[in-house]
Image 1 (spheres, rainbow, N blue to C red):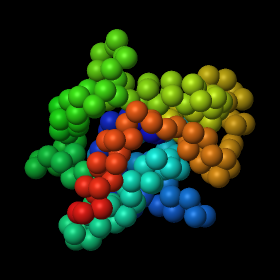
Image 2: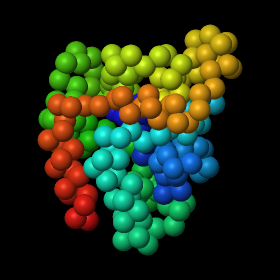
Image 3: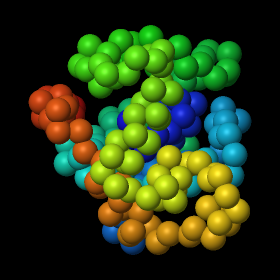
Length: 187
């Protein structure tokens, strides 16, 4: 909902994918594991983590979880994405998580089918509504762009992408963020 990632890219994140580049906390989407299925070259990207997520302590939480679980950098942050047979599985994401986002009203104005892709669409619409240009939206969400100019010549500096990503804010969800920030600080 903040970076418009596809479900398979999200649930196959590994601890090593949470990085800091020049003082900017980021998620690096890369296909460095057989279960990682990125759609195209634009999906392989480094995206700054938006401020609203940083403010709830997401980075510290992930680091603590890695230590608590004695996880290696190559381990999955969401280990249930891999079944016992080693196959990719996103059922836990689409069942429980989608019910949760529906309950807290993230997609309450979305007349379309509710699925993980709704969050991707929502991120695009929210970025547009706060005046983020299409080329920055492409960088954040991982779209190739429609034109050659967008695909080949719109190379933005990570700090500029961070400025644009930080414009994405969901004020109506602040009570949820306060709650989860509190929960994550205790784990």
